[in-house]
Length: 354
Image (tube, rainbow, N blue to C red; front, side, top):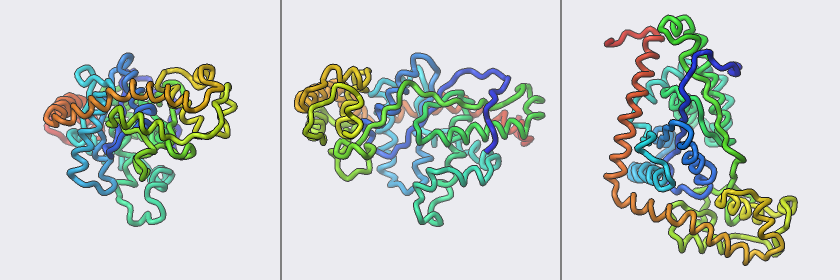
């Protein structure tokens, strides 16, 4: 790919963009790995949070379930503390400029860049000839999601860093290819920013409650492998109590967790939920049996997660209210996106209505 390391001279207003796919069963891993960071960013940045339903259809979806999942992710955002009145919360398909800019970026990105995207190889598997074109090209749509708002920062996990690098490469190539037109239209040295990854503190990688060597996943056949965000207090408590452990007492130092994946996972969950670190947790519980530690983890998990599940159920019982939030958010997002697309069309040389 092209190098994309030099920030454009033109100043851009700080803006955070991130999206979550509506694939159902949001769980503790999604909460600690992403949504808590979204909530925290509201205090320091203007934020746009998108339910990326266009990305969801790169693989087959049941229309009834998809509609429910869009609302469920929206409910999770709000129940976890995202304020849709101060920031923008919407679903991607209501703002057509995402798809429009994605086509421009399909014509900007190079085939070799997309061939290096590891997620397509993983998701398509061996039968790549039967994968959809959308699954192959969706990193260009992801770039459009970010850049249609000229967003400057994107909270990312390890699995999305490559896609953000591609978004930067696409932005840089567009800026280079149309430099004269960009300057001629009064945008200085660059029209698109090179979005920066936003990493807040150490990444929280939550593993399965049944196998500490596997990432917590909605696709695991055992519901006891994960805590779903819509679980009630009783379900949360039961899952924590049944979480796999080992017979040894907890160590007093982090080094003692190295060969104990289940213990390491539960200590990490406790640390994340209590906004501390593993060393502090082990200072408190080192030498204790798992029964004592699990009892404390049950209380903490129910205290932190129980209200989220209850609030999600309340919100999901009123789909019209959720839909109204999405309509309001998409109306506000469309104003920004339409402004970007008008400028892109001018830069490209399209004839428009003026």
